[in-house]
Structures are given as structure tokens and as C-alpha cells.
Length: 180
Length: 377
Image (cartoon, rainbow over all chains, first blue to last red; front, side):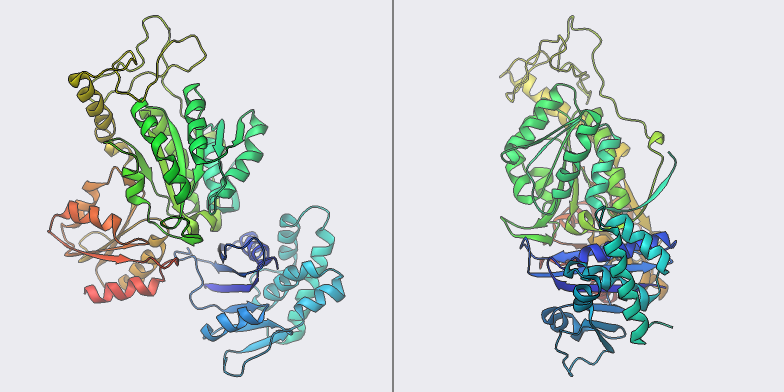
């Protein structure tokens, strides 16, 4: 089965790293994964989008065509990609203003504030988001997600990032929106 | 070390392929979307005694690579459209002087500065004809991350063997995409070696069989005395204005590539046997195309896919074969029909060629190719 993720927000939020880590976790779990990205010419800021496609089969087309999960961490990202959502679930940060015209199933979670308050560092919001996506999609078990995080984050920050992942997994569990 | 499984980026795989082939020298000027190659070479090359230099621009970069190659070092640079434009003059020099060099061009939207972070495939003709005069080059086009490794490795094999500038033409999608790659055991690869003369006595640097022979290349700094000039030259390397010598040189340079075309014509084919409609594509466009072709085939349509891994010299024979059954050939590419022009030339009216060009800085969606397929039936 092909599962598609779109991670969107602003440049510098670390969504690319979250996407890479998610793809790597899927590979550790024995699946195929492709990760692509699109971003503007700015060094920081601007819009940023990472996509991950995970499948048990060969992946011929690498981009998300009808995402199963859209992560939108900013209002701009939500407004840009929310209306394109058909079958999938939208996951926004609670700071995003929801639009009743966007009909796809939506869950708002305190991703950015949890990074700051529960982990103590705003910059690990990407790993909180990874935990949320991993938890809701079930593409890789917790231990494998942990292994992927430790393999990709800068040395010495493992503990902080793994804690962020766990906070994300907890948010996913409490949301009641996990895939069956 | 045996096989390893990795999540690898296209640019990273190009670098790994170059290192596996024995890359010893990289000179470059960073440019999106190719920069990861320079970044990784700067880290990896010094570990094995190789050299990395960041140059002042792309002209300096290719010139430095040519110089290093003349001393016998395997050399590479990587760039994107604007940098590739700057390199053209020296590409002509490398072609006429038969200096092996590999260039990765990770294409972005152009012309000019264009859209630096957006994919395109607009450099197909530039890769073939960018420098002035009739000249010989080989151009390979990976269609996935694994092939970035394989074809960069192959670029070194061909460049060293035929003493010809060889390009790896990727694009922003292929270059930045990460996917699962099963990397072969590094020991399973045979590193390409340049054919060298055994003694300086009587060495003539451009002496070769007039029918496409490749002269032996002596490394500078090892006791051989020879002249390397961008003027037309005879076997000794000295400049010549004699019509017969000039004619023989240019024809030999052309022949050494065209004569061996079968050795490096490479493509991926699926469902071509008896197909009514064929799709010809390359690089990242081919990923959308293949997805659409498979969908149409599941619905019982007789449609086949030909993905070119060698772009130049153009694989005429493989394309001509399509007309055995295909009445229509669709060519999706992120330009206004550069490969389609070649397909038209080859099929010469025996099949209808449908140009499917996309130039908005975005990769094709499979639906777009599928819609063209539906229309073709």
C-alpha cells in the first residue's frame, strides 16, 4: 500500500529533516521510501515542503499525488495545501486558524508549543511533528523511529530529539486520530 | 563490506559513483541544485588524498579540472545551467584536446538565473551542442538515485576510455530526491584506468588509428614532453593548418564516439513489444510517464515505455525500433521538445510524434501523461 505524506511550513522549521527521518525509518522497517522537497530561493524563511512516499511495492512516481497526511505548521501552508486534500487527514499546529471551507478531516495539535514547553527547545518542533506523523500513520514502530532520529540528528542532541519524538507520539495517541 | 541499504540522495549518489570510479580532483563553484556534490566532495576527497578546490567561477572550475586531468588525475565538476553555460568554451578545448573530464549538470529552470530551486530539462541540446564547432561528447541521464551512482561511474569509464568530456545530466528532482538504494559491494567495481604509453621515447600524443582510434595519454609531469593546444594539431601535438590533417582529426574525434555507440547506448524499456503507442522520456519526467504507462497498461492499453539513459549520441536504433508497431510516440520532457526533435528526426514520419513539454518549474503529474495517452488512443 502506498502512503503519502506532505510536510509543509516555513523554511527553517526542519521539515526536510523530519521527512528524511520518516523515510529512513520506513526503510529500517523494511519498506520502500522516497523523499522529495520543494523550497524557494531564500536561505531562510519562505515556504518549504517535503514529501515522503512509503510503500511495500516499487515506487514509480516520487511525489505525493493525493496525500494521506498533510502536516501544516503555518497558516500559509494550511491555506495552500489544505484545499487540495481529498481522502487524507490534515494535521495542523494549534496556532493555525482553521477554515471551515476546507472540508478534509482535520486535527489541530500543539506541536510548536509542546516543543517549547514540554521539551524546552522550539527548534525540535520538527521531531515532535515526526512523532505525530509516525504515531498517526503507523508506518514504523516507536523503536524504529527512535533509531532513525538518532541516526540523523547532530551528535549530542540525540536525547533532546528523542524526547521530542516521544512527545509527538504522545500527542498522536491522545488525538484519537490514529489510522486503524 | 557487502551490500548496504541506504536512504540516499541523487547528488550524493553521483558523488559516490565518482569516488567509486577513482575521482581524485574536484574543482567547482557551488550552485543550486548541484551544491551537495561539491559539499560532499570537499569532505570526502581529502580523506583519500584527493583534492577539492572551490574556484572563483565555473570557467575556472572546468579549466582546473582539465589541468588536473592532464596530470593523470580523474577529475569532475558539478554545476547547473548558468554554470554549464560558462563552461562551454573549455568543453570545446577538452573535446579537441581529448582530455577526459566528467561534468554533472543538475538542471534547473532557465534560461539565465531562471528558477534556481525548480526542476527543468532544458539543457539537452546545450549538452550536445553548447560549445562551438562539431565536437564529440557523451551525455548520460539517470532516472533514479541508483542510476546517479551507476551512470556517474560509467561516465568516468567512458570519459577515460574515449578521452572525451562526458556529462551526467540530472535535474533538481533527481538530484535532491532521496530513495532507498541497495549499494553494491565497492569491491565489485573495476576502477576505470586510462591507457598510457610505456615510454617517452618517440611518443606522439595524438597518434591513433584514423578510424576512430584513441591515442595513448601521457600524464604531464612524468617525463613526457608534449604540446596540448586548442588549435587544430597533428599527431605530434603541434599546431597545423593543413586541410588534410584538420579533416582527419575532426573525423577521427567524431568517429571514436559514433563507432562505439552500441557500447554506451543504454535505456530502460517496458511493454514495447507490439505497442500501439510508445512513450519516450528521460530523467524525472520519465517517473511520471512510467506511472501513467503502467496505469494505462492495467486498463488493457497497448502502450510501452522507453526511458533513455544515454541521451548523446542519441540512441537512434532503439527509437527507430518503436515504429515497428507504434503509430504514435509521446515525448514528455520538461522543455519545449528537445528530445522530441531527435525522435522526429529518427522516425522520419513513420510515426506521429506528440510533444508533451512542461516548462513551469514543476515536475509532471502522472495524470498529465495519462491524459495525453488517452488522447492518443
